[in-house]
Amino acid sequence: MKRQLTAAAAKNYAEAPASVQKAFDKQVKLLVENFRHPSLRTKKYDESRNIWQARVNRDRRFYFLITGDTLLILNIIPHPK
Image (cartoon, rainbow, N blue to C red; front, side, top):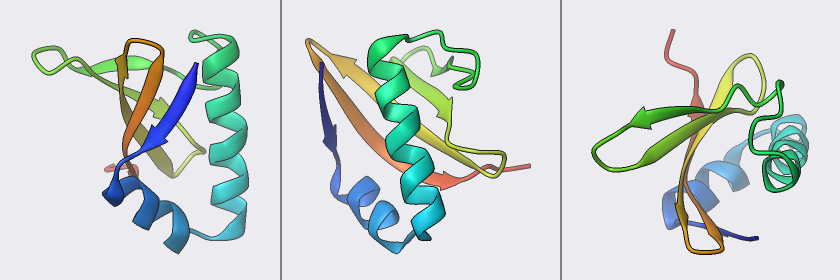
């Protein structure tokens, strides 16, 4: 499965601390290997638009779509608490 970042996600990734970038890279790799890996806590975020949410770390989440064989990462943002 390929991964593609939107402009917003690429900007957030570039602006994130190195530790968040490293965690994100690890989590996306896990997502490709095992969609239901426990550390991801993957869940449907928006049923109508088919948007999913997964965990980067305690404080960050990433949102994505699955289109064919591509993960389209929409955004990487702080977790709204």
